[in-house]
Image 1 (spheres, rainbow, N blue to C red):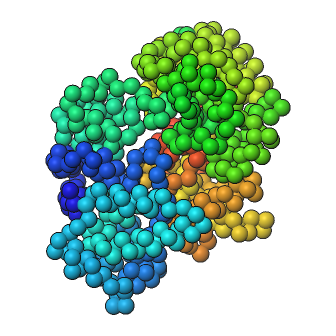
Image 2 (image 1 turned 90 degrees about the horizontal axis):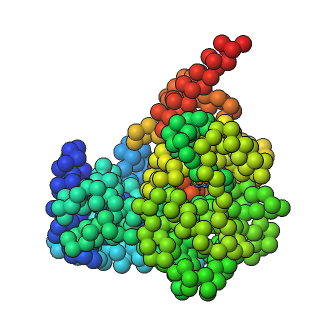
Image 3 (image 1 turned 30 degrees about the horizontal axis):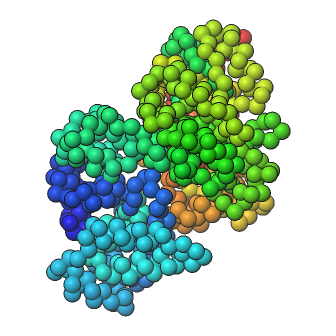
Length: 569
Ligand code: AMP
């Protein structure tokens, strides 16, 4: 299948606002594909080059792509940026610039003479190109990638270039995201929505889900978690009081909430791998945990997946989460870090036990299976208590806080493991005031001690498909974190301002604040008072941040509390 056919379908999809028509168009297209093309097209339509859980990453941002287009068309960066500002659509900017190239631009002899009449680029060829770009590494990787993209775009038509860059920058603009791709798979292969959603929950890979759904002999509900195919993590909802948790479930599994890094351990006879909550392979960062799983344990527990939290412990207390980040991000410091801050894997759940899926078993049964795993030097099972009495839970909570934990997790003993779901079956009870997970959408250049760093961050909550600023802060971070954020934000810059930069909404931070005020300063009408960043959350994606609705809810709770305290005075 030609990539141009994909582009034409996407154009039709973009042209209609009707969800059903979008799904119908894409479902028809999916039916025409061979098995090798099917997963690729599902990734492309969801705005990515590879599966979410693939180790392959293109790692080229908007500014690299813009530099290539600038070279190819001779439009200056500021001309391209001003086009982008008008449309907020990178792909259309590329298409426009290629269609209306300036006279001294690079010759595009190949596509005007060959591709225009006889398009050559197939879906499989594009996959080869993306794989090639993703595997370029080394000091000059970015330059090499840019050169490769430049020569590749010389062979594509403007329309193809529009979609190639849309995929690279994960900006599809077709109103077509993973949810609608799933609906199209349902329609294309006559499946029930629930079974396709279940398969996707297990596989976390839209392409694999499509291939399994296409095979009518496969019972999707019988799929099991697969080794080295990381599951999405089951998540918890905040609860304000123990009595509210007991109202939901009269009996609770109570265990410490550990301030660490969510991870899952996959054990096969041959090897062990550790994955983050974002389903990235983080095995390299934690050799002390991996090496602990001996040949004997691998033999006895082969085909097992364990869920837990990696935590760094020094002098018997969990140390700050940020220390773990360097392990995940910078491999070379691992040896040194093992001596300074050894890490431990605290296990609290098991989803696959010696080949048997436990996803649909009640949590209490999963805990029993987990308890058979031997405790090792760097692997421990979290001890839990089964409690129904408010005072007993309160005492346990106080004990855990004293021991340096973040709070308690309160879980329904009968609950199934719902991968990727933030349900009400797991509740989290924390000590401190509530925090908000927000995304940085812009940053200002710092002054004084912070000169050279991007440091005043504009923090936004989600409002449907948009983001609304509710506060700014430069508080709460160390120098190395300022440096880390400066590099990271610069790499996702969308435009430069006199005061700083605007960035792609991608970096999530957990924010503490004193209270929420009504304010005309921001469009949202609300502002955080004394906001400070509690921690950077690379483990959280922008889809998981708090919404304007939840901020409003917090504001109302705050008013209620203030009212109550006035009345009691
Ligand atoms: P939060 O990051 O505040 O949304 O809280 C959810 C996170 O708490 C999970 O993703 C885990 O990383 C972490 N966590 C710590 N201890 C536990 C536990 N005992 N059970 C489940 N999750 C836990």
